[in-house]
Length: 308
Ligand SMILES: [Zn+2]
Image 1 (cartoon, helix red, strand yellow):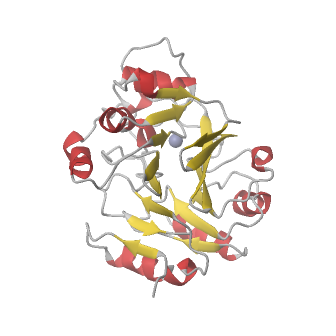
Image 2 (tube, rainbow, N blue to C red):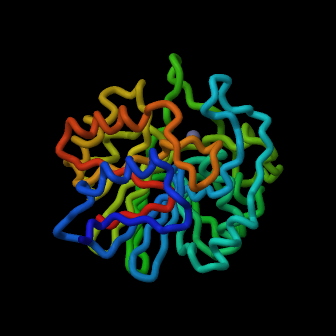
């Protein structure tokens, strides 16, 4: 039976992850399958394949230890590192490529691997001025960096990319953005530790092609007015959003109740790729919120695939 849901056998699924997958196979059955395939690379890392083209969002394979999900929180002085051998393995085996890389914001768990991936793939990279400044300082080829501010609707060979103004997650009692800040493109001192990677504004991206569209948010918040008229088939929703008024129902209403809601940014990234683990029950909270709507909930294991 073609459920539209599969996973590559690169890693053994943990019992928890297998249970998650078992709970979602029925949600993936669709009589109108598109020519678009989504693969989850952990955190908010997504690979969108449309024909021979590949679009990556926030690809972060290195997943170094930061303490983000411990009671003490992330150590701001954690050095940035890129596991080039790991990334080279996927690229050299032909398991990963990229025509575009879309950056939602500047934080370490979204941007750190992008400069190296851009260099290796030749992909065009979209981000705000701050994101581009950070990536250029980390060695990204500057002629591949394309500035975006939200509002762009761009057509490429076989797919289009709509860029939306968005918002970062608001965390804690004070609803604060962690590691906030911005920097101009002219600034080129090299970021060394995770606190050097400022949020720098947050963008959301809708990719359309192969008969489907997918909308991704890299933080658990959004600008409702930016979503007017959008009708994606799949929305990738981060867990969290406790401080955001009616986080899930208001979002799904604004989008006309998409067929699929796929969970993103839900796994503890102190653990390596291949060990998808929900550190704080965020996945269950999101599952319940989606269950109260007409959308179907999809959760993938690391490197799991989904065809809407
Ligand atoms: Zn962030």
